Each structure stands twice: as C-alpha cells, then as structure tokens.
Image (cartoon, rainbow, N blue to C red):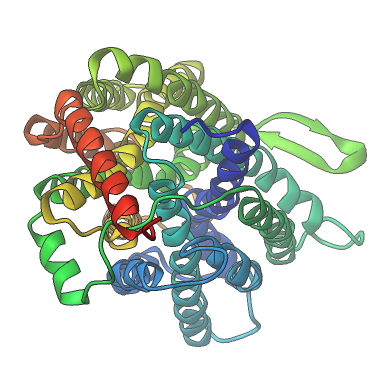
Length: 469
C-alpha cells in the first residue's frame, strides 16, 4: 500500500533525532574527550573499543525484546515514547565534564558513554525495525528509507552547522573567560531537547501494519533462522565496513583542519559571538552532498538495482578518498570539492543498506515461515556499532601511534598520520564494503517473487483465521 506523506515525514523525524547525536559522537566526541574533557587519545580509543563491543552485542537482545513486545501501539513504536527522555538526559551527561581527577574522569566517561550507547540501542533498534512493519511494498520501503536518510542528513546538517558555533557562543556567555566545557554541555542540551520532540512525533505519526505469518516462536528458532540467513551476514559485513569508512574519516576531520590545514574562521557575527570555521563548512557541505546521494539512490537503484548501485557508490567513494591524501595544506578548496564527491557517493549507500535489511527479513520469512523483524534489523544497528567501534578505536590508537598531543603544534609524522586517517584508511573501508556486494545474492527479480509469495501467504492466513460465515 502507498503511505501518506505525513507518515513518511514522521518516520524521517526519528532518524533526524538519532542522527543529531550520532553526528555529535562521530564528529566531535573524540575531540571533546581529548581537547576539552582532558583524557588521552589512546585512552579514548581503548574506551571506544571496550564499550562499543559490549554495546554492539547488546543490539540483538534489543531486537529480540522488540519482537516480543505486545502493546496497543505495536511492537516497536512504544520505545520511541518510553526511551526518548532517558536518551536526552544521558546525552547531556555524556558531554558534561565533572570536576574530578584524571582517573575519575576516565571512569565517568566509561559509565556515561556506555549508558548512552545502550539507551541509543533501546530507541534506535526499534526505530530501524519499524521500517520492516510499516509496509510490505519493497519500493515503498526504499522510499521510506530515502525519507529517513534525507531527514537523517538534515539533522546531521543542523548539528554540523551549529555545534561548534553554539559551543563557542555558550562558552563566552557571562563575560568571563571562555568555558568550553560549559559550552559543549549546553550545546548537547539544545540537541537533546530537539531529539526528544522529534522522537515523539515519529511515535505519533507512524503505524505498524505487517504481522508475523506464524505465532510466536522461541529465541532458539529465531537465532537458528538468522544463522541460515546468508544475505544478512553479507549486509552485516558491508555495513561494518561502511561505518568504519565514515567513522574514521569523520573522527579525524576536525584534527585535519586544526592541525594540518591550520584554517581560520570562514565568517563570524561578533554581536552574537557566533563564528563558523572551515571545518564546520566542510561538514555542512558533506551533509548536503549526502542528501543529494540519498535523493538519487531510489531512481538509480530502480534502474540498475540496489546491489549494483551500492557497489558503484562505494568504489567511487574509495577512489575519491585516496585522492585526498595528495592534497597540501594550501588546497582547502580541493578538500571541499572532494568532500562533496565522497559524500554524494556515501549518500547512495545508506537508504539502500536499510532497505536491503528489510529484504533479508522477507527472505528469512519466505525461507522459514517465521519472521523476526527486530532481530534482523538489529544487524543494522550492530553493524553501525561494530564499524564505529573499529573506526573510533583505530582513530584514537592511530593518533597516539603517530605521536599526537592535544593543543600543540604537531610534527610532520603526526600530520601525515592525520592525513592518512581522512584518506587512505577510509578508502580501504569503502573498498571492502563494496566488495561484499559481489557475493550478495538478493536481486530484484528474486525479491519480487518473494514479495508476491509472502503476500499470498498472508492473504491465505487471514482467510484461515477469519470466522466462518
């Protein structure tokens, strides 16, 4: 069935909310921890590895919990209502710097960041699973995923345009010396309130329609079905590599501008104490280009298929990323141009990836007669977390390996390492991601047959369950 525009927009609001904090974490959290909070890059990298491995393993449990949730609002929508307030509170605490010793700060960072990632899973896995139960139409799912990522990148765009200027503005309030710790805390609070409101709108404007073909099954059966779902595992690998590509280049970008390009402000509004730097412009252009890629994903994939579109997009992102390595500190404009090309390429992938997860849920139901949407969709969040784990941990360790120390002039070796972190290492991740598509088996013709057969099964089930006249 065709979904109303308001429902598509409502679904998009959910990822706008998630993406605001995802972007705060991926772009700014490591920088916050090293240059504002006050812990070493190596310690941050290790913390990211330890906390995110646990958090990634937590995602399938949230998926199973969602599959077994029964309320008058459905299985997945209630989590958007229940978890939004804890999400906002813990988000602010993550960007709060306590008056503690270095050891105390590290413990505080472990606790608040671990809680934040668990809360993120509790709201984001059900949100992702919602795509699989709003409609059974494959093209409508791609449209929903397109709306989702347009709003996701729009939310990210707001963060990237406003985070640094807001933190600077809040830090200078009161007429005293700038307090960047307070500035980042207040900035996180602004985005937390906005995210909470957007989650509530998603809850209010969406509906769940797809019901499982069979009665409830055991966790053992669900896990056994997942184990046999080869396309799921292929997408898991592609998703991990894709997020690694994004997370390592995003995490290193602010260091690249501060310590290699040495850029100054693009423009400022002194009366409002508002300043935008080149790094913010870089991020904003990237998000705008991402949105263009998201918009183009459906028409292109309708023409050449999701699998082929995914492969070409990741191959392009890899080639453009390698080119960044050769740029000099004077080549700021070329950096921005390549950022646009890379981001358009990456933008294609995200709606396709999530739409393809829905396809693997259909494949599993077609093959086994059972459907575990939450468990299947937890792969999406799990791949994000694993890719983010690897990208974030490697970013911290690589900074330490290349001799990085916060707030000083970096030597040539350190600068070269930062260059590789925004070019060579992401390029390898993109190439690995695209390579997974060479063995992905679900093509459009096969999926169309699956969709038709599942629709017939559901009709037959409804007739069997209806009372006799």
